[in-house]
Amino acid sequence: MRPARADSFLEQLRAVGAQRYHDKHPFHLAMHEGRLTAAQVRGWVANRYYYQKNIPVKDAAILGNLPDRDKRRVWIARILNQDGTLERGGGGLEQWFALARAVGLSDEALHSERDVQPGTRFAVDAYVTFARTQPWLPAVASSLTELFAPDLMSARIEALLAKYPWIDPKGLEYFRNRVTLAARDAESALPWVLQGANDPAEQAACLAALRFKCDVLWAILDATQAAYGIGS
Image (tube, rainbow, N blue to C red; front, side, top):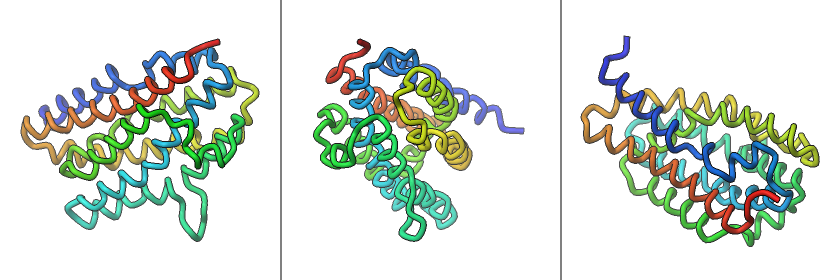
């Protein structure tokens, strides 16, 4: 049985997602309701790309701060899952390019980053800096948005298939994979946070880190909505 202290802390972590996760953003709600134009969908994919390309960068920063070999062996899988490997190729970033092609964006358009908005760039760069400079425990806690991701990924797949028939379904592989990968990553990181945050100050730091990560994801949507609008 988990100690009452840990249960209370876990409830607080989950409450952050219930209150602040980006599935509640107006742009995201419009996407799932089928109200976005093709240009707005493309704008979202292009801006989110800047976050996607930096996922392995922030994970490498956290990896370098992890205190023991066992944790590093677990965490390094995140980098390989996103970047792929020289032997097997693939990876989440490659799947994001497939999504871009499915919505009508070229590889060059993503590589150029010409559609990445300043607000997106600022938020993502702040997250990478956070991962690089903070102690490993709150940095890992910031990743716990993955607790909330599997349900969102499933809903996103359903919405995109139903509401945007012009998107090639083959381009949705990233989201299909994240349903299981996000759950697995959260399952490995959550015990580190619950066991490692042994006093109120550490727990407060972890909760603040998770709120910060939610703010990063929210800011990306703010920047996208400001640039492309919402709805037709």
